[in-house]
Length: 214
Image 1 (cartoon, rainbow, N blue to C red):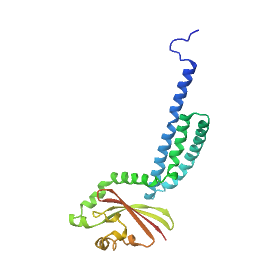
Image 2: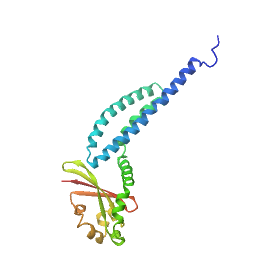
Image 3: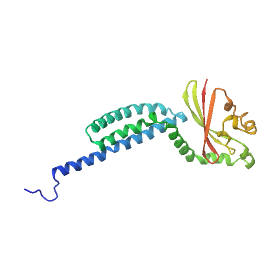
Image 4: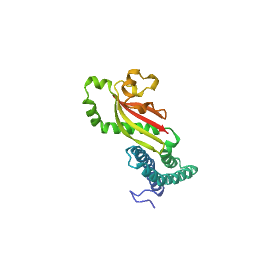
Protein backbone atom coordinates (compact mmCIF):
# COMPACT_ATOMS: atom_id res chain seq x y z
CA UNK A 1 0.00 0.00 0.00
CA UNK A 2 1.38 3.36 -0.95
CA UNK A 3 1.45 6.27 1.49
CA UNK A 4 -1.02 9.11 1.22
CA UNK A 5 0.24 12.14 -0.71
CA UNK A 6 1.74 14.72 1.60
CA UNK A 7 2.78 12.20 4.26
CA UNK A 8 6.54 11.92 4.86
CA UNK A 9 8.11 8.45 4.97
CA UNK A 10 9.20 7.58 8.53
CA UNK A 11 12.91 7.91 7.71
CA UNK A 12 12.48 11.35 6.16
CA UNK A 13 10.43 12.50 9.12
CA UNK A 14 13.13 11.26 11.50
CA UNK A 15 15.84 13.05 9.53
CA UNK A 16 13.83 16.28 9.53
CA UNK A 17 13.31 16.03 13.29
CA UNK A 18 17.02 15.40 13.82
CA UNK A 19 17.99 18.42 11.69
CA UNK A 20 15.54 20.59 13.61
CA UNK A 21 16.95 19.34 16.91
CA UNK A 22 20.55 19.94 15.78
CA UNK A 23 19.63 23.46 14.65
CA UNK A 24 18.15 24.10 18.11
CA UNK A 25 21.43 23.00 19.71
CA UNK A 26 23.23 25.93 18.10
CA UNK A 27 21.33 28.07 20.58
CA UNK A 28 23.73 26.83 23.27
CA UNK A 29 26.76 28.68 21.82
CA UNK A 30 24.59 31.79 21.45
CA UNK A 31 23.48 31.41 25.08
CA UNK A 32 27.12 31.00 26.17
CA UNK A 33 28.14 34.10 24.20
CA UNK A 34 25.38 36.16 25.85
CA UNK A 35 26.45 34.88 29.27
CA UNK A 36 30.06 35.77 28.55
CA UNK A 37 29.08 39.31 27.56
CA UNK A 38 26.92 39.73 30.67
CA UNK A 39 29.58 38.37 33.06
CA UNK A 40 32.33 40.49 31.51
CA UNK A 41 30.13 43.59 31.70
CA UNK A 42 29.28 42.93 35.36
CA UNK A 43 32.98 42.50 36.14
CA UNK A 44 33.75 45.76 34.34
CA UNK A 45 31.00 47.61 36.21
CA UNK A 46 32.69 46.73 39.50
CA UNK A 47 34.76 49.86 38.86
CA UNK A 48 31.68 51.90 39.65
CA UNK A 49 31.51 50.32 43.10
CA UNK A 50 28.15 48.62 42.66
CA UNK A 51 29.20 45.21 43.96
CA UNK A 52 28.56 43.70 40.52
CA UNK A 53 31.65 41.47 40.80
CA UNK A 54 29.89 39.44 43.51
CA UNK A 55 26.81 39.15 41.31
CA UNK A 56 28.99 38.01 38.39
CA UNK A 57 30.57 35.35 40.61
CA UNK A 58 27.24 33.92 41.77
CA UNK A 59 25.88 33.94 38.22
CA UNK A 60 28.99 32.24 36.89
CA UNK A 61 28.66 29.18 39.15
CA UNK A 62 25.29 27.86 37.84
CA UNK A 63 26.15 28.84 34.26
CA UNK A 64 29.48 27.00 34.51
CA UNK A 65 27.74 23.88 35.87
CA UNK A 66 25.29 23.92 32.97
CA UNK A 67 28.15 24.30 30.50
CA UNK A 68 30.03 21.36 32.06
CA UNK A 69 26.96 19.15 31.53
CA UNK A 70 26.67 20.45 27.95
CA UNK A 71 30.35 19.60 27.38
CA UNK A 72 29.84 16.04 28.65
CA UNK A 73 26.87 15.55 26.33
CA UNK A 74 29.00 16.97 23.53
CA UNK A 75 31.77 14.45 24.18
CA UNK A 76 29.19 11.64 24.18
CA UNK A 77 27.83 12.86 20.84
CA UNK A 78 31.37 13.01 19.45
CA UNK A 79 31.99 9.40 20.44
CA UNK A 80 28.76 8.38 18.74
CA UNK A 81 29.89 10.10 15.54
CA UNK A 82 27.30 12.90 15.62
CA UNK A 83 29.84 15.53 14.74
CA UNK A 84 27.56 18.50 14.02
CA UNK A 85 25.73 17.95 17.28
CA UNK A 86 29.01 17.60 19.15
CA UNK A 87 30.42 20.76 17.57
CA UNK A 88 27.41 22.80 18.69
CA UNK A 89 27.53 21.43 22.22
CA UNK A 90 31.31 21.70 22.70
CA UNK A 91 31.45 25.21 21.27
CA UNK A 92 29.22 26.56 24.07
CA UNK A 93 31.51 25.80 27.04
CA UNK A 94 34.53 26.78 24.95
CA UNK A 95 33.03 30.27 24.48
CA UNK A 96 32.25 30.65 28.18
CA UNK A 97 35.65 29.48 29.41
CA UNK A 98 37.73 31.06 26.61
CA UNK A 99 38.89 34.02 28.78
CA UNK A 100 40.53 31.47 31.09
CA UNK A 101 42.23 29.77 28.15
CA UNK A 102 43.29 32.72 25.99
CA UNK A 103 44.31 36.25 27.04
CA UNK A 104 41.21 37.87 25.52
CA UNK A 105 40.05 39.57 28.72
CA UNK A 106 41.93 42.82 28.02
CA UNK A 107 40.36 43.02 24.56
CA UNK A 108 36.90 42.69 26.09
CA UNK A 109 37.64 45.51 28.53
CA UNK A 110 38.95 47.71 25.71
CA UNK A 111 35.62 47.22 23.95
CA UNK A 112 33.72 48.16 27.12
CA UNK A 113 36.00 51.19 27.61
CA UNK A 114 35.06 52.37 24.12
CA UNK A 115 31.35 51.82 24.76
CA UNK A 116 31.55 53.71 28.06
CA UNK A 117 33.51 56.55 26.48
CA UNK A 118 31.19 57.07 23.52
CA UNK A 119 28.06 56.84 25.67
CA UNK A 120 29.26 59.70 27.89
CA UNK A 121 31.68 61.52 25.61
CA UNK A 122 29.58 64.69 25.68
CA UNK A 123 30.15 65.43 29.36
CA UNK A 124 33.92 65.03 29.01
CA UNK A 125 34.03 67.20 25.91
CA UNK A 126 32.01 69.84 27.74
CA UNK A 127 34.71 70.12 30.42
CA UNK A 128 37.55 70.17 27.91
CA UNK A 129 35.86 72.69 25.61
CA UNK A 130 35.58 75.18 28.47
CA UNK A 131 39.38 75.44 28.59
CA UNK A 132 41.05 78.17 26.51
CA UNK A 133 42.75 76.68 23.43
CA UNK A 134 46.25 77.44 24.71
CA UNK A 135 45.54 75.86 28.10
CA UNK A 136 43.79 72.91 26.48
CA UNK A 137 46.90 72.14 24.44
CA UNK A 138 49.14 71.97 27.50
CA UNK A 139 46.82 70.76 30.25
CA UNK A 140 46.25 67.09 31.04
CA UNK A 141 42.71 66.48 32.32
CA UNK A 142 41.89 63.41 34.44
CA UNK A 143 38.38 61.99 34.81
CA UNK A 144 38.17 59.33 37.51
CA UNK A 145 36.75 56.04 36.22
CA UNK A 146 36.61 53.95 39.39
CA UNK A 147 38.57 51.32 41.28
CA UNK A 148 38.73 47.53 41.61
CA UNK A 149 40.60 45.28 43.99
CA UNK A 150 40.67 44.42 47.65
CA UNK A 151 42.64 45.68 50.66
CA UNK A 152 46.24 46.46 49.65
CA UNK A 153 45.97 45.38 46.01
CA UNK A 154 43.86 47.81 43.99
CA UNK A 155 43.56 49.15 40.48
CA UNK A 156 42.38 52.68 39.74
CA UNK A 157 41.10 53.86 36.36
CA UNK A 158 40.95 57.24 34.62
CA UNK A 159 39.87 58.71 31.36
CA UNK A 160 42.60 61.18 30.42
CA UNK A 161 42.58 64.05 27.94
CA UNK A 162 46.11 64.77 26.76
CA UNK A 163 46.82 66.48 23.44
CA UNK A 164 50.52 65.59 23.68
CA UNK A 165 49.80 61.89 24.06
CA UNK A 166 52.62 61.54 26.59
CA UNK A 167 50.27 59.92 29.11
CA UNK A 168 50.64 56.72 27.07
CA UNK A 169 54.46 56.82 27.12
CA UNK A 170 56.77 55.20 29.68
CA UNK A 171 58.06 57.62 32.31
CA UNK A 172 61.55 57.77 30.80
CA UNK A 173 60.15 58.86 27.42
CA UNK A 174 58.02 61.72 28.74
CA UNK A 175 59.39 65.23 28.34
CA UNK A 176 60.52 67.17 31.39
CA UNK A 177 58.07 69.95 30.53
CA UNK A 178 55.19 67.44 30.63
CA UNK A 179 56.39 66.05 33.95
CA UNK A 180 56.65 69.53 35.43
CA UNK A 181 53.04 70.25 34.46
CA UNK A 182 51.49 66.94 35.52
CA UNK A 183 53.44 65.33 38.37
CA UNK A 184 53.00 68.06 41.01
CA UNK A 185 49.21 67.80 40.69
CA UNK A 186 49.02 64.04 40.08
CA UNK A 187 51.86 62.71 42.21
CA UNK A 188 50.44 59.16 42.17
CA UNK A 189 52.00 58.81 38.71
CA UNK A 190 55.42 58.59 40.34
CA UNK A 191 54.46 56.43 43.32
CA UNK A 192 57.05 53.63 43.65
CA UNK A 193 54.31 51.19 44.66
CA UNK A 194 52.17 51.85 41.60
CA UNK A 195 52.46 50.96 37.93
CA UNK A 196 50.47 52.85 35.32
CA UNK A 197 49.59 52.08 31.71
CA UNK A 198 47.44 53.90 29.17
CA UNK A 199 46.21 53.53 25.61
CA UNK A 200 44.38 55.82 23.23
CA UNK A 201 40.62 55.46 22.93
CA UNK A 202 39.82 58.21 20.45
CA UNK A 203 41.37 61.54 19.49
CA UNK A 204 43.19 62.92 22.53
CA UNK A 205 41.35 60.71 25.02
CA UNK A 206 43.16 57.85 26.75
CA UNK A 207 42.17 55.08 29.13
CA UNK A 208 44.63 54.79 32.02
CA UNK A 209 45.01 52.06 34.62
CA UNK A 210 47.10 52.20 37.78
CA UNK A 211 47.83 49.12 39.85
CA UNK A 212 49.16 49.60 43.37
CA UNK A 213 50.39 47.18 45.99
CA UNK A 214 51.26 48.49 49.45
